[in-house]
Image 1 (tube, rainbow, N blue to C red):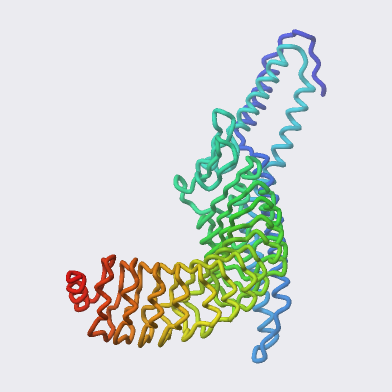
Image 2: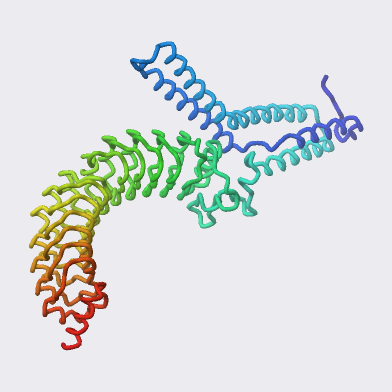
Length: 496
């Protein structure tokens, strides 16, 4: 039945009571999801569905072991599938609630519109405005379902109480997410909400280090919306895979995903063409995608503590690399002409490729804790080396070519099997620190006295019982950790 009133007619008490009842009913509803939250929920539903199907497909490819009855194996498969479906249900639950809640609010919006058609006249319009203001106020108080997650700023920007320092926008009045006020770990739904907010505010930094719940093993597909992000930290979580949509992060320069459970990288990873720093250490990677060669701006790459049997050839062709931390040294490393720091410590290296000598810009080389007995002849070309760590290997002697490293400042050869030091060590006149502890040395060459800059000489746990006469020339020496030799040197220096 349509209600008709004349202009300026005072509405009846029953009419006003009905309007007020509708207002009270609206106010009694829970907080309305924001647009970003609904978008996040939709993204989560899609992501969970995709991952669910992928895992179910993987189960379908498994073959029954020889000694297991087919029927028993079938039960196992069904149990696995049931667990996957249950996990997916749990991960969708919050997202589905938000999507359904939004649909109910849309239905209520329709009811409000119907009221506007039933009301006419100035007085009734004022009542309608009152309803609209109440609705608007309720909506503004609700940005996300977790009220501790976001608060509205006076200047109109949103500040995320629960996630401060997780997200920083490009604006001078940056929005922050805090993991300090609210230390609770993030569910997949909340991660999606953070992504939506970050995309909306144009965030440039997103820090989710150790913030994800253990059961969050993948990221929402919506992560591809973060087109303005330049730094992304996903480290110290349990992420097993990165979505293909990560290629949308075209502004990304620094990506840290160390200490996760990554098995591989998506083929689209090579689209992150502006990456300069990439930390992939402590994952379960065995290979890199072919598209990795597109990362031509990469300068700092850490692949250590993965399951590579050797450095992938694709990494060897990223020619701008300046810092590389890997498990092995391939022959293709010679193409990394810009490399200044190379770290291959704590591996099982027995020898090094001759191509290592082509890295003529190396200043820092860490080869400690391997099984090396010698250095390649091409080592003589590394004339810019300043720091060389050969400790914890199996060297019995150093090559005479070590004298060509005239810029060397720190040389560590601790815990080897050295029986002598070559006389050419005297040419390393820039040496400030020389560590020779835990070897089999019986003497030092006279040339040691030519190291005018030497401040630290570590000779502990050797067989040295005498010193060359030139030791008294080491006027810069301030630390000698062998008590017997320290007394001898002090006497020699004092006499000089």
